Length: 319
Image 1 (cartoon, helix red, strand yellow):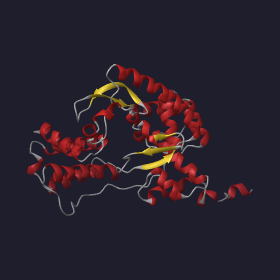
Image 2 (cartoon, rainbow, N blue to C red; image 1 turned 180 degrees about the horizontal axis):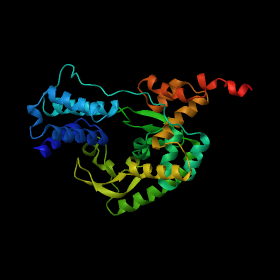
Image 3 (tube, helix red, strand yellow; image 1 turned 135 degrees about the vertical axis):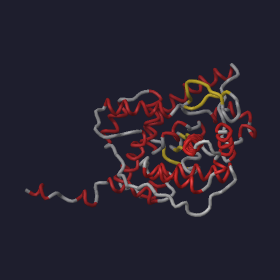
Image 4 (spheres, rainbow, N blue to C red; image 1 turned 90 degrees about the vertical axis):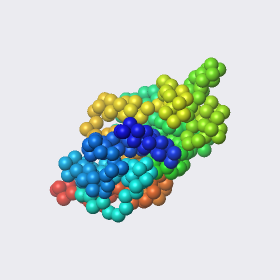
């Protein structure tokens, strides 16, 4: 029963072209919910069981508000689009506390030290995280046609919230990225001559434009080292560089640089936004570059600027 239900969840997600990370998260929460309710099928349950499950996450699991919201979205998707029993009205759950966390931001010198401790593809990706404000998932999923070195632009397609945007490509990234793409193209040409060189296409483009799977424009900027079977089509393709490889490299570089801050891949994006605001750029411009739907999300970076209370001279310095 469980495997059939999870397969139905995956089909419903893929029909709606949700991202793979959303699919993985939703399947994980549905599996956890099924285990929590025991042997009964979710179709036999209702709002009371959903309420208890989500409330338990907050009270006993002490999850964050974002985690609880993700679990709720997964279950609402299950009942609406898979079981066709949409949940209406307020669930009346106990909400997890939503805290405002000031993001960790590196200084320009700390960024240089971390990047200096990295090399290869991971160094190039980290450079885009800081130099272009990309999320790590957006960076590794770039296609060749998304990068325009002449105009100094990167086009992010279907980023978070399935929104496209255009952001900058740092001039200092152009030369190493060009050398990297020359190597990628050489390998692509070799694989193409042997009948390979294919990559998966988004949505239904593999049916509309079947020949495009081997086109240079659709190739990954950061291809992976191995080929895998596409779960949606069953075809064997080369996937892009995995986010965990970059995450491990960043963690190792942070340790090597002897930073006391708890920095991660996303810290580069936080630093990108903060340093632009410190340089005097308009917050609306930074919002567009980051791809935030609401400027209030971008406003979080004003808390870490050297302004307001942090710009006041301490009385201890008056002695």
